[in-house]
Length: 118
Image (cartoon, rainbow, N blue to C red; front, side, top):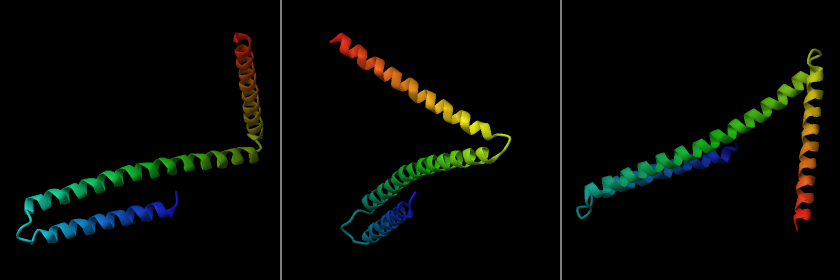
């Protein structure tokens, strides 16, 4: 995940803090209802919490995907370099190749069936 996402979230939180502080300073004005200002400030806090939770969950999911991909890459490389497991990588490649062939055959059969049905 790029640092700009973290930076934007930080900026968002700072702006919410500024908004809440501004609202509280407005409660000093006599014609403004202090309870309304407090309600709006709480809404800002709720908004901050909701957005922060949503964005951090997206960041967490992306970081987990990247971590898993990098782990798999490292593990395959380690297994290929290990003399006791060297054949493991070749077996994995063969399984993938056979799966691609099966998918291609299934796709060919489906297209043939569609032509026959017409």
